[in-house]
Image: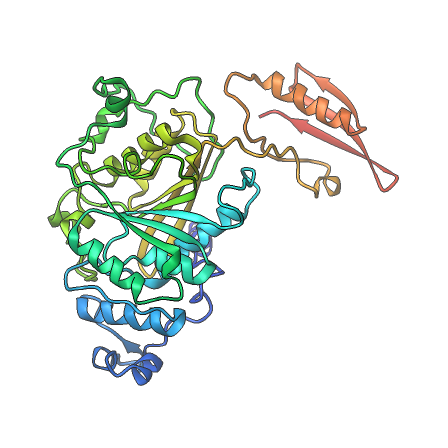
Length: 420
Protein backbone atom coordinates (compact mmCIF):
# COMPACT_ATOMS: atom_id res chain seq x y z
CA UNK A 1 0.00 0.00 0.00
CA UNK A 2 2.75 2.41 1.01
CA UNK A 3 4.77 1.69 -2.13
CA UNK A 4 1.72 2.35 -4.32
CA UNK A 5 1.18 5.73 -2.64
CA UNK A 6 4.83 6.66 -3.13
CA UNK A 7 4.66 5.59 -6.77
CA UNK A 8 1.50 7.65 -7.31
CA UNK A 9 3.14 10.74 -5.84
CA UNK A 10 6.08 10.38 -8.21
CA UNK A 11 3.78 10.00 -11.18
CA UNK A 12 1.88 13.15 -10.20
CA UNK A 13 5.03 15.23 -9.86
CA UNK A 14 4.77 18.33 -12.06
CA UNK A 15 6.72 18.22 -15.29
CA UNK A 16 8.00 20.79 -17.73
CA UNK A 17 5.27 22.98 -19.23
CA UNK A 18 3.78 21.30 -22.34
CA UNK A 19 4.23 24.50 -24.39
CA UNK A 20 7.90 24.63 -23.48
CA UNK A 21 10.14 24.09 -26.48
CA UNK A 22 12.09 21.50 -24.47
CA UNK A 23 9.14 19.48 -23.17
CA UNK A 24 9.50 16.84 -25.89
CA UNK A 25 13.05 17.62 -27.03
CA UNK A 26 15.53 18.29 -24.22
CA UNK A 27 18.72 20.12 -25.24
CA UNK A 28 21.00 17.82 -27.24
CA UNK A 29 24.48 18.62 -25.97
CA UNK A 30 26.19 16.53 -28.64
CA UNK A 31 24.34 18.30 -31.44
CA UNK A 32 24.99 21.73 -29.95
CA UNK A 33 28.70 20.90 -29.56
CA UNK A 34 28.90 19.93 -33.23
CA UNK A 35 27.19 23.14 -34.33
CA UNK A 36 28.87 25.58 -31.96
CA UNK A 37 32.63 25.07 -31.53
CA UNK A 38 32.69 27.38 -28.50
CA UNK A 39 30.45 24.94 -26.65
CA UNK A 40 32.32 21.76 -27.62
CA UNK A 41 35.09 22.04 -24.93
CA UNK A 42 32.48 21.96 -22.18
CA UNK A 43 30.87 18.69 -23.29
CA UNK A 44 32.09 15.32 -22.05
CA UNK A 45 30.63 11.83 -22.16
CA UNK A 46 29.65 9.71 -19.17
CA UNK A 47 30.23 5.96 -18.95
CA UNK A 48 26.87 5.27 -20.51
CA UNK A 49 27.82 7.40 -23.51
CA UNK A 50 25.57 10.35 -22.70
CA UNK A 51 26.87 13.87 -23.38
CA UNK A 52 27.05 16.02 -20.25
CA UNK A 53 28.41 19.30 -18.95
CA UNK A 54 29.86 20.23 -15.58
CA UNK A 55 27.04 22.15 -13.89
CA UNK A 56 29.49 23.49 -11.29
CA UNK A 57 31.41 25.33 -14.03
CA UNK A 58 29.98 28.82 -14.55
CA UNK A 59 31.57 29.09 -17.99
CA UNK A 60 29.84 25.87 -19.07
CA UNK A 61 26.39 26.94 -17.87
CA UNK A 62 26.80 30.39 -19.41
CA UNK A 63 27.85 28.97 -22.78
CA UNK A 64 24.95 26.51 -22.72
CA UNK A 65 22.51 29.36 -22.12
CA UNK A 66 24.10 31.37 -24.92
CA UNK A 67 23.85 28.60 -27.51
CA UNK A 68 20.32 27.59 -26.49
CA UNK A 69 19.10 31.17 -26.86
CA UNK A 70 20.82 31.44 -30.24
CA UNK A 71 19.93 28.00 -31.60
CA UNK A 72 16.33 27.71 -30.38
CA UNK A 73 15.23 31.33 -30.07
CA UNK A 74 17.39 33.30 -32.51
CA UNK A 75 18.66 35.53 -29.69
CA UNK A 76 22.11 37.01 -29.29
CA UNK A 77 23.05 37.03 -25.61
CA UNK A 78 25.94 37.34 -23.18
CA UNK A 79 26.66 38.30 -19.57
CA UNK A 80 29.95 39.14 -17.85
CA UNK A 81 31.58 36.90 -15.26
CA UNK A 82 29.75 36.61 -11.96
CA UNK A 83 26.31 37.76 -13.10
CA UNK A 84 23.37 35.43 -12.60
CA UNK A 85 23.13 32.91 -15.46
CA UNK A 86 19.56 31.70 -16.08
CA UNK A 87 18.54 28.26 -17.29
CA UNK A 88 16.47 28.64 -20.45
CA UNK A 89 13.97 25.76 -19.94
CA UNK A 90 13.13 26.91 -16.41
CA UNK A 91 12.59 30.54 -17.41
CA UNK A 92 10.50 29.40 -20.37
CA UNK A 93 8.22 27.52 -17.95
CA UNK A 94 7.51 30.77 -16.11
CA UNK A 95 6.75 32.63 -19.36
CA UNK A 96 4.30 29.94 -20.47
CA UNK A 97 2.59 29.93 -17.07
CA UNK A 98 2.04 33.69 -17.43
CA UNK A 99 0.63 32.97 -20.89
CA UNK A 100 -1.82 30.50 -19.33
CA UNK A 101 -2.93 33.07 -16.73
CA UNK A 102 -3.50 35.76 -19.35
CA UNK A 103 -5.44 33.46 -21.66
CA UNK A 104 -7.62 31.99 -18.89
CA UNK A 105 -11.07 33.32 -18.05
CA UNK A 106 -10.33 33.50 -14.32
CA UNK A 107 -10.48 37.28 -14.46
CA UNK A 108 -12.07 39.32 -17.26
CA UNK A 109 -9.91 40.33 -20.19
CA UNK A 110 -9.51 44.08 -20.28
CA UNK A 111 -8.16 46.22 -23.11
CA UNK A 112 -5.21 47.90 -21.43
CA UNK A 113 -2.69 48.36 -24.22
CA UNK A 114 -4.77 47.53 -27.27
CA UNK A 115 -4.16 43.95 -28.29
CA UNK A 116 -0.59 44.02 -26.98
CA UNK A 117 0.52 42.30 -23.79
CA UNK A 118 2.78 44.39 -21.58
CA UNK A 119 4.83 42.98 -18.72
CA UNK A 120 7.10 44.34 -16.02
CA UNK A 121 10.22 42.39 -15.04
CA UNK A 122 11.27 43.22 -11.47
CA UNK A 123 15.07 43.02 -11.33
CA UNK A 124 15.69 42.01 -14.92
CA UNK A 125 19.43 41.59 -14.32
CA UNK A 126 22.24 41.66 -16.85
CA UNK A 127 20.71 38.56 -18.46
CA UNK A 128 17.33 40.25 -19.21
CA UNK A 129 16.02 36.74 -19.82
CA UNK A 130 12.28 37.23 -19.30
CA UNK A 131 11.88 40.21 -21.64
CA UNK A 132 13.99 38.46 -24.29
CA UNK A 133 12.00 35.23 -24.10
CA UNK A 134 8.60 36.91 -23.79
CA UNK A 135 9.27 39.22 -26.73
CA UNK A 136 10.74 36.52 -28.99
CA UNK A 137 8.27 33.75 -28.15
CA UNK A 138 5.04 35.73 -27.86
CA UNK A 139 5.64 39.28 -29.07
CA UNK A 140 5.07 40.77 -25.62
CA UNK A 141 6.47 44.18 -24.69
CA UNK A 142 8.33 44.68 -21.41
CA UNK A 143 9.74 47.15 -18.96
CA UNK A 144 12.73 45.59 -17.21
CA UNK A 145 13.95 47.33 -14.06
CA UNK A 146 17.28 47.14 -12.24
CA UNK A 147 19.59 49.27 -10.15
CA UNK A 148 23.25 48.31 -10.70
CA UNK A 149 25.30 49.84 -13.50
CA UNK A 150 26.49 46.42 -14.67
CA UNK A 151 22.98 44.99 -14.88
CA UNK A 152 21.64 48.05 -16.72
CA UNK A 153 24.57 48.14 -19.15
CA UNK A 154 24.38 44.47 -20.12
CA UNK A 155 20.61 44.32 -20.21
CA UNK A 156 20.71 47.20 -22.69
CA UNK A 157 23.40 45.39 -24.70
CA UNK A 158 21.34 42.22 -24.84
CA UNK A 159 18.30 44.16 -26.02
CA UNK A 160 20.23 46.10 -28.68
CA UNK A 161 21.90 42.89 -29.89
CA UNK A 162 18.45 41.71 -30.98
CA UNK A 163 17.09 44.50 -33.20
CA UNK A 164 14.10 42.39 -34.27
CA UNK A 165 12.61 42.74 -30.76
CA UNK A 166 14.51 45.72 -29.30
CA UNK A 167 11.57 48.09 -29.71
CA UNK A 168 9.50 45.86 -27.43
CA UNK A 169 11.83 46.16 -24.42
CA UNK A 170 12.58 49.18 -22.21
CA UNK A 171 15.27 48.98 -19.52
CA UNK A 172 14.48 51.27 -16.59
CA UNK A 173 16.87 52.38 -13.87
CA UNK A 174 15.72 52.06 -10.26
CA UNK A 175 16.84 54.71 -7.80
CA UNK A 176 19.34 52.88 -5.60
CA UNK A 177 18.40 54.41 -2.28
CA UNK A 178 20.05 52.89 0.74
CA UNK A 179 16.72 52.45 2.47
CA UNK A 180 13.13 52.92 1.46
CA UNK A 181 10.18 52.91 3.87
CA UNK A 182 7.45 50.34 3.58
CA UNK A 183 4.40 51.16 1.51
CA UNK A 184 2.33 51.47 4.67
CA UNK A 185 4.82 53.99 6.07
CA UNK A 186 4.77 55.89 2.78
CA UNK A 187 0.97 56.11 2.73
CA UNK A 188 0.27 56.67 6.42
CA UNK A 189 3.52 57.89 7.92
CA UNK A 190 3.29 55.10 10.48
CA UNK A 191 5.56 52.14 11.02
CA UNK A 192 4.35 48.66 10.22
CA UNK A 193 3.42 46.81 13.39
CA UNK A 194 4.22 43.16 13.96
CA UNK A 195 1.39 40.71 13.85
CA UNK A 196 1.30 38.41 16.86
CA UNK A 197 -0.73 35.60 15.34
CA UNK A 198 -0.13 34.43 11.80
CA UNK A 199 -2.19 31.93 9.85
CA UNK A 200 0.28 29.54 8.24
CA UNK A 201 -2.37 27.53 6.40
CA UNK A 202 -2.83 27.81 2.66
CA UNK A 203 -4.04 25.78 -0.28
CA UNK A 204 -1.82 25.56 -3.32
CA UNK A 205 -4.37 26.69 -5.89
CA UNK A 206 -7.39 28.62 -4.83
CA UNK A 207 -9.55 31.68 -4.97
CA UNK A 208 -8.87 34.17 -2.23
CA UNK A 209 -11.39 35.46 0.22
CA UNK A 210 -11.21 39.26 0.15
CA UNK A 211 -11.06 40.81 3.57
CA UNK A 212 -13.12 43.80 4.51
CA UNK A 213 -9.94 45.77 5.14
CA UNK A 214 -6.90 46.08 2.94
CA UNK A 215 -4.54 46.94 5.79
CA UNK A 216 -1.22 45.16 5.65
CA UNK A 217 0.83 44.10 8.64
CA UNK A 218 4.16 42.32 8.50
CA UNK A 219 4.26 39.28 10.77
CA UNK A 220 6.80 38.68 13.46
CA UNK A 221 7.88 35.56 11.56
CA UNK A 222 9.10 37.62 8.62
CA UNK A 223 12.43 38.03 10.47
CA UNK A 224 13.07 41.46 8.97
CA UNK A 225 11.19 43.70 6.56
CA UNK A 226 12.48 44.75 3.19
CA UNK A 227 14.50 47.97 3.22
CA UNK A 228 16.02 48.62 -0.16
CA UNK A 229 15.45 50.24 -3.53
CA UNK A 230 11.85 50.63 -4.79
CA UNK A 231 10.26 47.52 -6.30
CA UNK A 232 7.07 48.63 -8.09
CA UNK A 233 5.84 51.77 -6.34
CA UNK A 234 8.28 54.49 -7.34
CA UNK A 235 9.29 52.65 -10.52
CA UNK A 236 5.94 52.24 -12.27
CA UNK A 237 4.99 55.62 -13.74
CA UNK A 238 1.69 57.41 -13.36
CA UNK A 239 -0.90 56.20 -15.83
CA UNK A 240 0.98 53.05 -16.83
CA UNK A 241 -0.98 49.82 -17.10
CA UNK A 242 0.52 46.33 -17.22
CA UNK A 243 -0.88 42.89 -17.81
CA UNK A 244 1.54 41.27 -15.39
CA UNK A 245 4.74 41.58 -13.42
CA UNK A 246 7.30 38.81 -13.24
CA UNK A 247 10.12 38.34 -10.75
CA UNK A 248 13.00 36.13 -9.70
CA UNK A 249 13.41 37.54 -6.18
CA UNK A 250 16.58 37.39 -4.10
CA UNK A 251 16.06 33.92 -2.68
CA UNK A 252 18.58 34.16 0.18
CA UNK A 253 19.53 36.15 3.26
CA UNK A 254 23.28 35.78 2.72
CA UNK A 255 25.74 34.75 0.03
CA UNK A 256 26.81 31.86 2.27
CA UNK A 257 23.27 30.52 2.13
CA UNK A 258 23.15 31.08 -1.64
CA UNK A 259 26.26 28.95 -2.13
CA UNK A 260 24.98 25.87 -0.29
CA UNK A 261 24.20 23.90 -3.46
CA UNK A 262 27.50 22.34 -4.59
CA UNK A 263 25.92 20.77 -7.69
CA UNK A 264 25.42 23.96 -9.69
CA UNK A 265 27.19 27.22 -10.47
CA UNK A 266 24.98 29.84 -12.04
CA UNK A 267 26.84 32.85 -10.71
CA UNK A 268 24.92 35.70 -9.14
CA UNK A 269 25.84 38.93 -7.39
CA UNK A 270 24.70 39.89 -3.88
CA UNK A 271 22.21 42.32 -5.43
CA UNK A 272 20.66 39.45 -7.41
CA UNK A 273 20.79 36.76 -4.76
CA UNK A 274 20.46 38.36 -1.33
CA UNK A 275 18.29 40.74 0.65
CA UNK A 276 17.54 41.19 4.33
CA UNK A 277 14.79 38.74 5.16
CA UNK A 278 15.35 36.78 1.93
CA UNK A 279 12.63 36.01 -0.58
CA UNK A 280 9.93 36.17 2.08
CA UNK A 281 10.65 39.84 2.81
CA UNK A 282 11.14 40.75 -0.86
CA UNK A 283 7.89 39.18 -2.07
CA UNK A 284 6.11 40.66 0.93
CA UNK A 285 7.24 44.03 -0.44
CA UNK A 286 5.75 43.17 -3.85
CA UNK A 287 2.49 42.37 -2.04
CA UNK A 288 2.65 45.72 -0.24
CA UNK A 289 3.22 47.49 -3.55
CA UNK A 290 0.35 45.60 -5.15
CA UNK A 291 -1.97 46.83 -2.39
CA UNK A 292 -1.05 50.40 -3.37
CA UNK A 293 -1.19 49.83 -7.13
CA UNK A 294 -4.21 47.48 -7.18
CA UNK A 295 -5.48 47.08 -10.76
CA UNK A 296 -2.46 48.78 -12.36
CA UNK A 297 -1.51 45.15 -13.05
CA UNK A 298 -3.92 42.40 -14.05
CA UNK A 299 -1.65 39.81 -12.47
CA UNK A 300 1.14 40.17 -9.92
CA UNK A 301 3.48 37.18 -9.93
CA UNK A 302 6.74 36.02 -8.43
CA UNK A 303 8.84 32.90 -8.31
CA UNK A 304 9.23 31.38 -4.84
CA UNK A 305 12.11 29.14 -3.78
CA UNK A 306 10.73 27.56 -0.61
CA UNK A 307 7.38 25.88 -0.18
CA UNK A 308 7.15 27.06 3.44
CA UNK A 309 7.42 30.64 2.19
CA UNK A 310 4.71 29.99 -0.38
CA UNK A 311 2.25 29.03 2.35
CA UNK A 312 3.25 32.08 4.37
CA UNK A 313 2.77 34.44 1.42
CA UNK A 314 -0.63 32.96 0.54
CA UNK A 315 -1.74 33.67 4.09
CA UNK A 316 -0.69 37.31 3.64
CA UNK A 317 -2.51 37.65 0.34
CA UNK A 318 -5.73 36.47 1.97
CA UNK A 319 -5.58 39.45 4.30
CA UNK A 320 -5.05 42.27 1.83
CA UNK A 321 -8.17 41.97 -0.32
CA UNK A 322 -6.92 40.12 -3.39
CA UNK A 323 -9.63 38.49 -5.47
CA UNK A 324 -7.71 35.48 -6.70
CA UNK A 325 -4.53 33.53 -5.87
CA UNK A 326 -2.98 30.92 -8.17
CA UNK A 327 0.14 28.81 -7.76
CA UNK A 328 2.16 26.36 -9.80
CA UNK A 329 5.34 24.32 -9.47
CA UNK A 330 8.27 24.71 -11.84
CA UNK A 331 10.45 21.64 -12.23
CA UNK A 332 13.90 21.81 -13.81
CA UNK A 333 16.11 18.80 -13.20
CA UNK A 334 16.41 18.35 -9.44
CA UNK A 335 15.47 21.97 -8.69
CA UNK A 336 11.93 22.94 -7.67
CA UNK A 337 10.56 26.44 -7.68
CA UNK A 338 7.00 27.65 -7.24
CA UNK A 339 5.06 30.35 -9.02
CA UNK A 340 2.73 32.64 -7.06
CA UNK A 341 0.18 34.89 -8.77
CA UNK A 342 -2.54 37.17 -7.45
CA UNK A 343 -4.92 39.82 -8.72
CA UNK A 344 -7.21 42.61 -7.52
CA UNK A 345 -9.36 42.40 -10.66
CA UNK A 346 -12.82 41.05 -9.78
CA UNK A 347 -12.99 37.47 -11.10
CA UNK A 348 -15.34 36.39 -13.83
CA UNK A 349 -18.15 34.65 -11.94
CA UNK A 350 -18.26 31.02 -12.97
CA UNK A 351 -21.10 28.99 -11.54
CA UNK A 352 -20.83 25.69 -13.32
CA UNK A 353 -18.95 24.06 -16.20
CA UNK A 354 -20.62 23.25 -19.54
CA UNK A 355 -20.30 19.54 -18.74
CA UNK A 356 -22.59 19.57 -15.73
CA UNK A 357 -25.56 18.09 -17.60
CA UNK A 358 -23.61 14.88 -17.99
CA UNK A 359 -23.28 14.34 -14.24
CA UNK A 360 -25.77 13.75 -11.48
CA UNK A 361 -23.45 14.58 -8.58
CA UNK A 362 -21.74 17.91 -9.08
CA UNK A 363 -18.68 19.35 -7.45
CA UNK A 364 -17.70 22.87 -8.40
CA UNK A 365 -16.26 26.06 -6.92
CA UNK A 366 -17.78 29.52 -6.75
CA UNK A 367 -15.31 32.34 -7.39
CA UNK A 368 -15.45 35.82 -5.98
CA UNK A 369 -17.67 34.95 -3.01
CA UNK A 370 -17.23 37.51 -0.26
CA UNK A 371 -16.35 36.28 3.23
CA UNK A 372 -19.42 37.87 4.80
CA UNK A 373 -21.74 35.55 2.84
CA UNK A 374 -22.95 32.53 4.81
CA UNK A 375 -23.40 29.00 3.50
CA UNK A 376 -27.13 29.63 3.26
CA UNK A 377 -26.51 32.77 1.18
CA UNK A 378 -24.42 30.73 -1.24
CA UNK A 379 -27.09 28.04 -1.59
CA UNK A 380 -29.78 30.66 -2.14
CA UNK A 381 -27.64 32.17 -4.92
CA UNK A 382 -27.33 28.73 -6.51
CA UNK A 383 -31.08 28.21 -6.26
CA UNK A 384 -31.71 31.60 -7.89
CA UNK A 385 -29.27 30.88 -10.69
CA UNK A 386 -30.75 27.51 -11.63
CA UNK A 387 -34.30 28.79 -11.28
CA UNK A 388 -33.52 31.65 -13.66
CA UNK A 389 -32.20 29.04 -16.11
CA UNK A 390 -35.54 27.24 -16.14
CA UNK A 391 -34.74 24.57 -13.58
CA UNK A 392 -37.01 23.44 -10.80
CA UNK A 393 -35.20 23.91 -7.48
CA UNK A 394 -35.92 23.07 -3.87
CA UNK A 395 -33.69 24.41 -1.08
CA UNK A 396 -33.29 22.32 2.08
CA UNK A 397 -31.80 24.67 4.68
CA UNK A 398 -31.47 21.99 7.36
CA UNK A 399 -29.23 19.74 5.23
CA UNK A 400 -27.65 22.60 3.23
CA UNK A 401 -28.61 21.09 -0.12
CA UNK A 402 -30.37 22.28 -3.26
CA UNK A 403 -32.22 19.73 -5.39
CA UNK A 404 -32.49 20.86 -9.01
CA UNK A 405 -34.25 19.33 -11.99
CA UNK A 406 -32.69 20.36 -15.30
CA UNK A 407 -34.01 19.74 -18.81
CA UNK A 408 -31.36 18.69 -21.30
CA UNK A 409 -32.14 17.23 -24.73
CA UNK A 410 -35.71 16.50 -23.56
CA UNK A 411 -34.43 14.39 -20.69
CA UNK A 412 -34.91 15.27 -17.05
CA UNK A 413 -31.86 15.00 -14.85
CA UNK A 414 -31.76 15.37 -11.12
CA UNK A 415 -28.87 17.34 -9.67
CA UNK A 416 -28.10 17.57 -5.99
CA UNK A 417 -25.94 20.51 -4.87
CA UNK A 418 -24.44 20.38 -1.40
CA UNK A 419 -22.73 23.17 0.54
CA UNK A 420 -19.60 21.84 2.19
